[in-house]
Image (cartoon, rainbow, N blue to C red; front, side, top):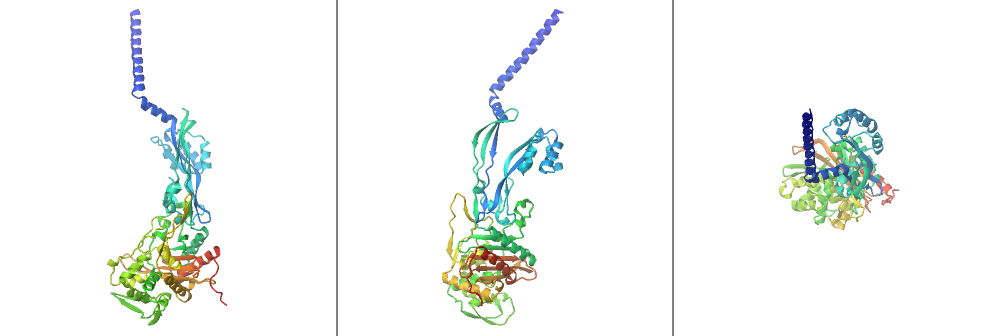
Length: 557
């Protein structure tokens, strides 16, 4: 009996010795071999690095109105492995945040994942209501969401910010680095229960810089409204407008219709989000004749009073070109060629210039390359190199066919004429907070004398030519109409599809505004003088009154 008891005691002691030996060996291994890795693991269990988002800068218009600003938001996330009742949790989220429970439930029930987003940039008050429920597995951190308080005003210009806080288009993209600022960091120390007991190694965030635009929200909103009415009246595909200060190149309005609410950008078709005034090209038609006339005057080939006998049509290589309206042979001065928008007259001047000098003047006015406007995605337009010209090119380019321009290029070219022959780079941003105003780029295109001659001719276009619908009481208006058939995919022109445009300068004696209006595929009428000139007149009338520009025309008695 005692022998059996002693044997059991010895066996028990042996087992106990082996267990303690194993524990000792394990402890020694942990303290020596695994000490460093376990220390790091313990540190991560009680310390958490937190990123402090930097507030994004605000975008203001020229009078200080907020066009884009950051708002407080809360992002809600969850660890499905810690959620005990995913159905109950999903219903709680639906009640507080409005997120559909049936969509959320599968994510919360998936215990193979340790992190899922419940709601990005949620309303802080709603997120706080959910947080008060103290549901296990849910976490919250502050974020900022972008808000566009003017909604559709300048939406294509401003662009938008993605959910990660990065600018994705427009000025939000162009100035993303300055607007974003720099995020901060801090280390949060927690007790075993997960409660924060200390904050260490704090690196404060640096807010983004504010951006101040040359745009004026009132001028912008009015231009958009006029375009909206014009598109509706003529059942047009779209319309664009630019209001430019010719003295500085400052863009006061850059409008495109149809538009969209910038706060709803994720659900808006990409076609509506383009800033067509900068990214899209069109054949300018007769508005391009100004460049042909400018070249002929500058080269001393003609004067405004030089007269030509012009037939109704002209053979140029393999093409027969005629004026827009049937007529007999006429005797026009250079000024009348522009006023009556004669294709034959413009081609006659171009043939006197020759292809080399004409091509040089096209380049000098900036066509075929970007203007350098401070906006992403600018198109350089389409200009055929001189060595690729065919025999008929001299017959179509001078009248604005076989060449494609952007609205901002054309507005800047007319602004140079309005500014006594000096071209100013168009720009949208006046300055960024903390920095000086960017230096303005200027270059002379034509002499003051030629610019004055061109202005007189452009006034005749409105007074007695194709642009009479642009006239307004009390102000001298200079401008040019354009009607261009749209090219098709075969290399020819599409039947019944036109771009109607008008570029105007007002007041013509002391220019304050260059206003371009282009209407894509109007129906019922196609002429720039009928479709686009009245829209110019409405935009100009508002702008002159809004900025209290005094009249420059003698009253009619």
